Image 1 (tube, helix red, strand yellow):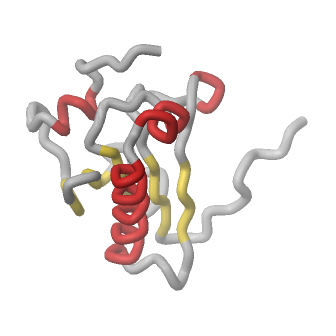
Image 2 (cartoon, rainbow, N blue to C red):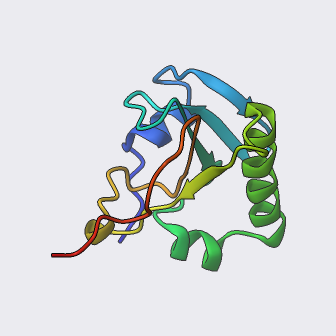
Length: 121
């Protein structure tokens, strides 16, 4: 899938749409989710045109990959969620319900989050 420069995260990175920023460095931007699924729900996005984790891991430089994942760790630490715990989620493709075609990681915390997936029937 080709990267769509009109996706909302690309527009946020360009400053066309505001966000509730919690962190930014040369490799990543982190901001509060507008539809939080936990008391603390922050999105961390790389500063590059990557559709998915597969795209990011195959196409980003080693420096960009390391910088992005260090940013994810720093944001979680800054949120104060290391001790109680948190969940990282990165959706990929339609079966995972990826809503924005720009690679991103969700940090969810602030309460017990329950099982990872619903039980199958």
